[in-house]
Image 1 (cartoon, helix red, strand yellow):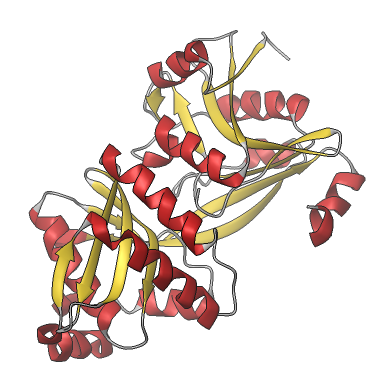
Image 2: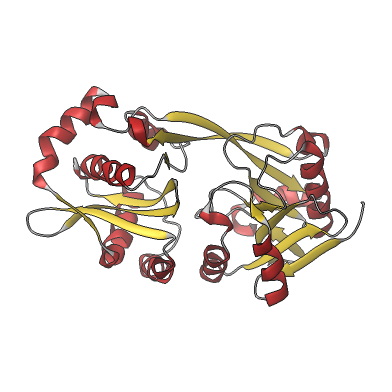
Length: 315
């Protein structure tokens, strides 16, 4: 391994300074210190920064880490869809940069998951080192083509029919309603939410003052929110981070109104943050977004760590 690795936590002012001095690899709030440290606190992790001291042209990552028995494990959190990556230049990294970073990670962690940003499709450096690469997908919508005239017939008709039933709002006070709607939406799909309702509400309220998070919703004539979304934003990009709704047209109306607002504010790209659950992906597909590929990289130091990964009670 060339050079030495710098390993620190974002609780350390020096480490935080070094991390924030690097350029974002791509526009994303997921590499912002506040987002990382807030998520780490709620999920019981710590944020470790890994970079090489050997070369100025390096690729660095911040990982949310926990102890598993005697080992360090860096797993991708459900609310952190893409890895936090920074570099000295905001350009696409080379295979050599990726290989150098992976080598550092292998020395530090017994088990690692990394979700590369959409569009980073050259994962040969990982495969050649024995990592696994699993394809995943998200949808991205150009906001210049986000009006109902560009949608499939069913959501277009639904939006035009139901639009007058709702009032579109942006309001930080939506946090409790959104947390509840998220819980109910996950329950309908027989899935567990990423955090309990009360904790999710607290997470939203902690991130709101930063400006990285915005809450939108549609309320009915009784002033009751039937759909709400939390967007993470880094203009001109916005990410559909958390969403929940009651069954019916409310979410379709909310998205139609939301995209008009974002486009008027100068936003250009809306990322749906995943298209990997069939029923949810089908709902998103009807708005005619572009399908984008990204990769999940997985590393296990030994067969034992692979086994631990597959046993739910020992993860």
